[in-house]
Image (cartoon, rainbow, N blue to C red; front, side, top):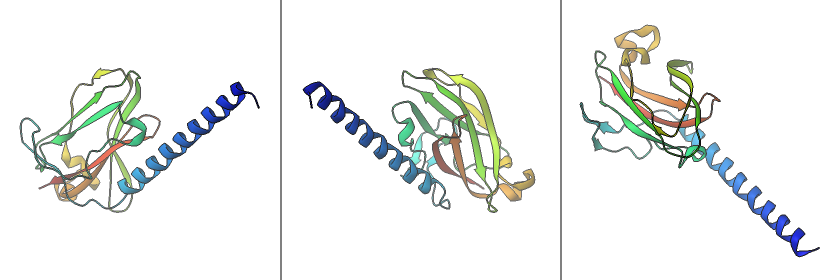
Length: 168
């Protein structure tokens, strides 16, 4: 085998290994995301300052590390009559294909909370808000109260981040 062929075989093997490792890490991240909510990152009412951190909340998935930054939503905890603000930054050189935010009910059903199917270019994405009353079945305050797991996907249904919001 020539040096040229050996180089490409080794390079391909390394690329395949890195790809498999990243896919495994993404699968593990997704398995963690679908566990029951447990704890939350507490944030300030007005500026989103993190007051206490839940290390499982608002991490960026392996597929999007270096491309997106998800700041913990604020305020958290929240009441049913105030909005929750989300700030997501597209930081990489590549664009992101849209954004979708969901919550999952106790029965496993997903509810869409926010959708933007425009391609997100590098730079700051404008903050957006979600009414926490939408977290519950039938849009009732009683249904929204408690710890709610929130999922952020791109338009290709790839999980970007997840975390928990407490509605009081």
